[in-house]
Length: 73
Image 1 (spheres, rainbow, N blue to C red):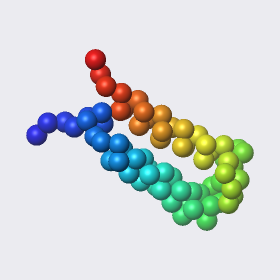
Image 2: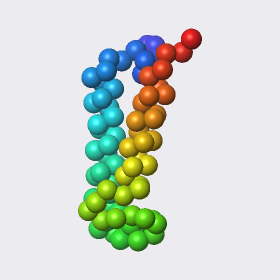
Image 3: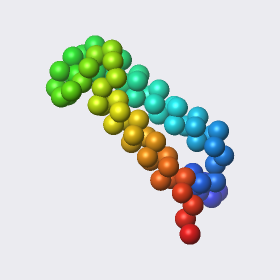
Image 4: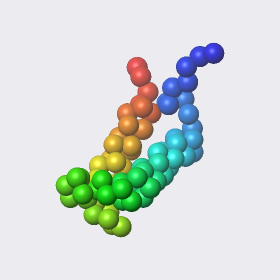
């Protein structure tokens, strides 16, 4: 069995995987950070709103998928 690179996947598969990771981030926020109160230790975190941590997570996920999708020469 060969390793499958992200550049070999079609765009719909990449978007689906990215959406899954974004859903995982939102689930982590709503089920772990907010109920346990861990958000108090994150500077600039805002409950029930878009904050810098959300922007950072989205940027990281999109950046990782863009870098992985580049074709190696």
